[in-house]
Length: 116
Image 1 (tube, rainbow, N blue to C red):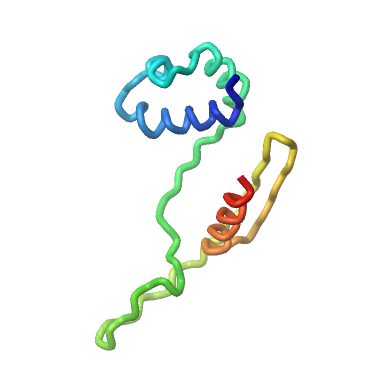
Image 2 (cartoon, rainbow, N blue to C red; image 1 turned 180 degrees about the vertical axis):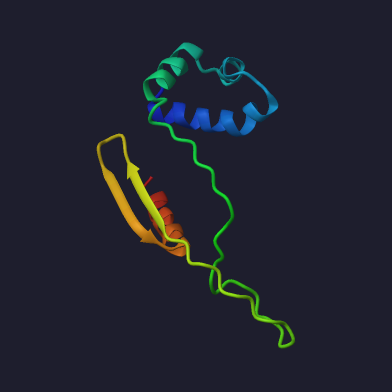
């Protein structure tokens, strides 16, 4: 039996691997030995919960830049980006963290990976 997480991972793989090549979801499911009718039911039930996110740019990591040589000009500091995370897990757990810096977000993700 397939879980919602299995279908979610399959969908993410499809969007990153097969969709850019023009492959249909039916063909992708067949190639990965997943019954399309089960995937389709999952997608219809959850499509309003799946939100596509576009990320533009990458926050600079303070403290990881190479030291500047004496002759180089200093760069202007970038505007600090603050991040809000609202995570809902299938067992009902909800995690909400706001006002995070990029480093704090990385730390949170590393801690959550340890729980999986």
